[in-house]
Image (cartoon, rainbow, N blue to C red):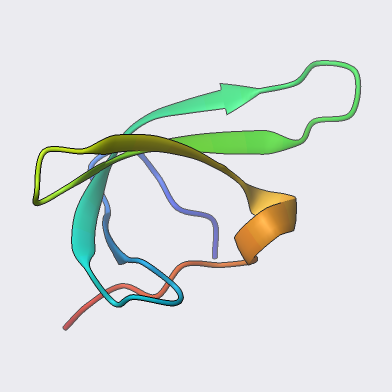
Length: 58
């Protein structure tokens, strides 16, 4: 299942929680980049090729 804006996610290595605030799509290859704001207020961009699917915390 693809992540959507507003989905809660967890960092794949560190387990820190965050929320998807934007999704960027490369029109040439349809590669999606998720813009994630971690609960620590840090914002990062993660390409789907780097992490696969993020784990949604329960």
